[in-house]
Image (cartoon, rainbow, N blue to C red; front, top):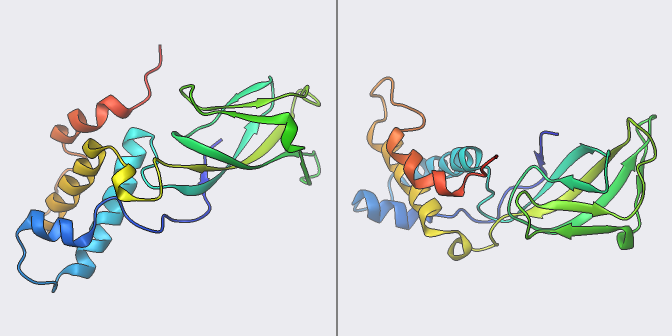
Length: 181
């Protein structure tokens, strides 16, 4: 059920110029380092929050045991395709009229208007996940987390052991993490 990213976002939630200004750097000599740190920080923030920041395409294989299947990421904006996986590995596309996205629920759910074909049935789902295609669509707190984490890594290059996930960033990301009751 581990989701697989099929394409990377076209933009990052924080621009290199924005991070350069945050760090009070005068010129663009370190821009390639900053771009790498922003991408890495986005991936860490996404993993910690279980939220996709910038819209990208994902694939997940889910056990098909009921008519409502929880998708592993949030927010989900659209279904691209849904296919039943046969025992021989062949994917049989399901008609779009049988597949509905319930993006308002947490976690987002796929509703299938068909009975599962057997106890070991699986579906492959391709979907778009993310707050939007532009940095402005991402909640400011998550953009702040990316900016702070990238800045911390930049400032502590070569310092030895710097925590990969600082405790102070936990408070910034915690409100976005799904809660289980």
